[in-house]
Image 1 (cartoon, helix red, strand yellow):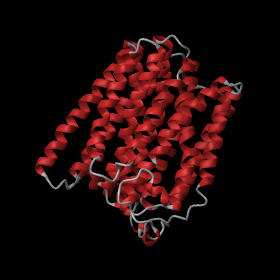
Image 2 (cartoon, rainbow, N blue to C red):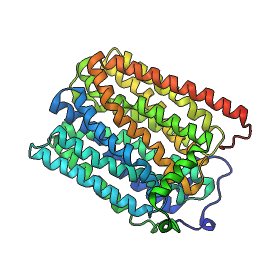
Image 3 (tube, rainbow, N blue to C red):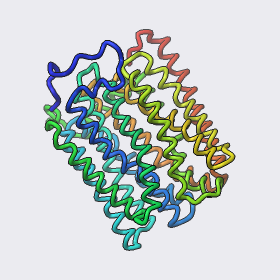
Image 4 (cartoon, rainbow, N blue to C red):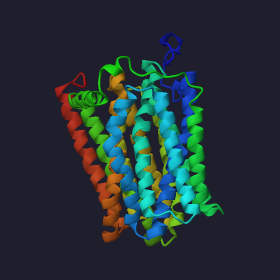
Length: 421
């Protein structure tokens, strides 16, 4: 149950980066979120390296990521409907424990030399199921724990552990892969962190399901949420924008191990610094843009970020050396981090509170799309090369962003008051 409105601090007169952290329950949740995001971003590195080492082709990495995407594409909208009707804290605990079981199983199978691409893909599918319910519940709970004037800042601050984990996750993954414990130790650590993330939720007040939820079926809630987005033109465009940019541009992660080995002539284990530098850029821009989350500047900066993201991808594709590629990834991360952070803020300001879980679940289709796109993108990379593939992704991101700029201007001319209907 969220704190009573009277107990919440008054909103700041001027935007502050960490305003929502003044709410104690949000502060507890925010701290525990780090333990959940770090193993998730470790998995991007460890799963990619392990899959590439098992099969030595890009499509092996794409297959593992694809399995996660199938689950997310099928269940993310249902997870959002669940977040709007079930106790959010309970959903978070159960899904994080499920993720712990997945990574613990990977550690055991690898230690016994029984881990295969099929097993990796199966575990990734289960992880995709967990994330489908975990993501919307986390964002909806963040908005629930603070007052209306701090919701944008709260969901934006929820991106700080996300982007911070993009720094720490690859760094820890690289350390573990290079250590005597190797990938087995990395998977064991990832499992332990998810257990810790679940336990960190215990100090939070118990959250309750939606009043009257038993009177409707979860599928009816899902249909209601889809109708809500479909009838709000600006919200529909913003959700589609985020999904389109992320599912195309962020699928670059499937070709990074191959890029490092084929273009930069380094072993696949050398991929963590690219993720690390990207995450540094993302964290820097997340902190810089969180203060804009509840202001009118959020939307124009949000729309500009994909152009920066695309410029970074193009720079990586043209990098003459490994070190230049690592440096270019800072630009990639900056554009991606700013876009992701302000997406949450823009969406929460355009959405009625009791629809937040369902709307956020639709934005999660972006990451399901990344996983689904990873297989064809990795096959393309095996055919035309990693550099050409990255350049193509950059061009697609620019095309999507330009189309959205034109569409938003048309909406603004038709609706000067910027209503969402």
